[in-house]
Length: 194
Image (cartoon, rainbow, N blue to C red; front, side, top):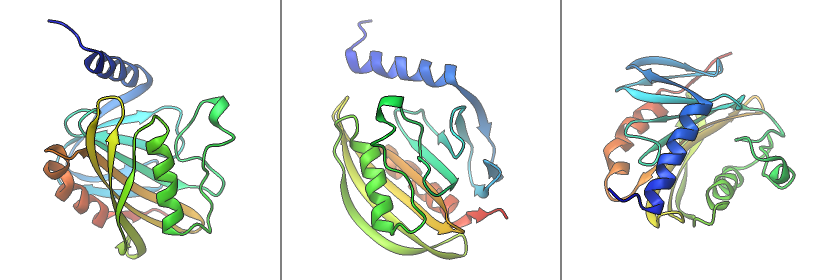
């Protein structure tokens, strides 16, 4: 079997993630994320907990290249959503407590396009998140490494100068629709721990 460049990249990414992260199964029920928030999970997921992230963890149902469900649990004022390399740290966007939902979407856009992928916001609306005022946004992206069209949705709120954000993305052709209803249920169940 010949390994093509995109497939080799997927294998390398999988090996990197598994070597740098703790992998565990998330069973249905209530789950605590980073000791800052809880969600109720209707079906099992796989949890990859980036060891270097104080605020973030990522889940997948079918594998990281096929679907990503990021949780940003209580990102503090002036903090990065995801760790970056030292040379990119100064220009990386940081969360500010006075940001609008539009500005938070711009952070997600910056994270998405940093590898040359595209980002197109389709919708940004207010929503009830964690029993209070929040927002939802939907977007499309063309992933540069394999030219796969990605659909994504984000659900967020700012409470006590901290950002709580759930960000889901998957290929538009099948995987996005396969899991979006479960992701919406998870977002509706979000509770912030005091």
